[in-house]
Image (cartoon, rainbow, N blue to C red; front, side):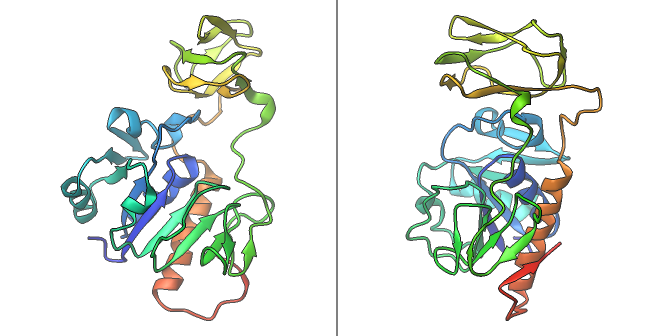
Length: 268
């Protein structure tokens, strides 16, 4: 088991994945939880594909979907991979004696009835001192700042720009033969939504692409196209890495009992 305690990270997007990886490498026993199939675009920058494929690797660290207590314990004890739990109810996962919960699910996440020593919410979705212990700013001008009272003020963590996203034109199942990292000319076929052709509205590199076979609604983003050959399409984005280090720092202060802290303090 990790020397610094056990942490459950809720979510498998880029930010949650960066946090889980950083905590594992710093000596925590870490698991991820995602109840349903994630609709991620930047799949090479997160652990989301482990939900479908059984495993995924990010920056040399593997996350592995587990189906029983033995597999979970094997991951937590060895530190060789991050277990991914997919039970429908968070309460069923929370029966384990986690030292901390890091919730990256955003507004609307239900944490009712959870008995955790420490709950840290990333961005909007929690109110420090009311339904969680700490809130960390992840958007706006001050990502990494920690609040001991009140909600986040900087908004959610925004990955990418709205003008780079390609939306589904109709409801249906998304299919594509494209790969993240490819360069696509304007007008070339990106895929199909149901039987409706989806063409690239601009030329650029595919930074994100929804997993083929996932059902989508009209208007839902299914691809992200950005200009320039130097676009990052894999690994951990620098802002997510900074937020992950800030989470590690915040948990370390709590573990070491460095209290009291100001109502708002900067952790990175």
